[in-house]
Image 1: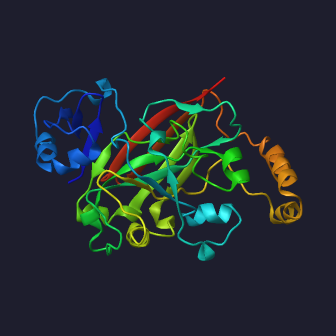
Image 2: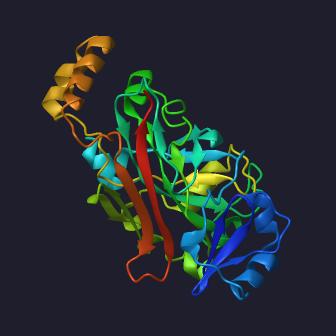
Image 3: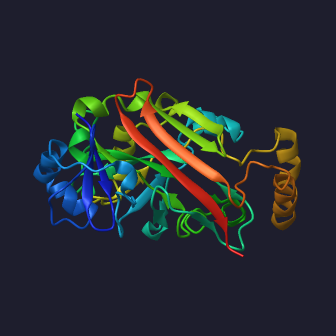
Length: 312
């Protein structure tokens, strides 16, 4: 049975068919809550539910924590970028945990950023210590992964691409909306990971819509590679990649070839001049909605709704 955990400023809650039931716990962090599983399970069958819509939800993943992300991990996204999925290596980057925000918080675009993009992703939240060298297989995956969350990997493309690094471009405050729920799964439910569908809308227009079956590197293989060099702790977060449909689009191959012959400064100037005509980048006041669930609704990570605000 999935258990959907919610968080407010002063309490943890479990979402039930009748509403949200408060968890009786001293936990203040995600790691501490995961260590108090009996309290979470008691709330799942508890009384005194309140309407979920009356709660001001925060991210169910608390900081500071490690936030690791996978790059180009959906075949559709790789193809759209003009690359071959069969040649894409398993690649990671880090985000600052200070970028984590709640499922209804505004996404704030810094004044110097022009091209703000979205990437709906599934986040894995870890249940236990994973020291470097830990062996992880599909059979033991559920021992290490506590649950899943909806995330949005907001990206400043005009910072990311010319600098050829991801950390700054994806780490500004509010650039990782998380939630609404941390959905705890058992081993059988986690086996349905590939059935999950990621969707993202901007102002009601569906921009991204793909199941995890399109993912190149699945969680067990990913974590086995990551644990070779990166320690992980309870409450840490791994973003697992995004499908096709982001605002960023690759230029046609002939154009890309000609651009490759130009000096870098001129190449990026021309590239972003072309991107300026792309209306899919996020604008002030845009409403972003992101959701992840199986098509039959058996596993539902919920739906987040955030609004883009420009810093003047």
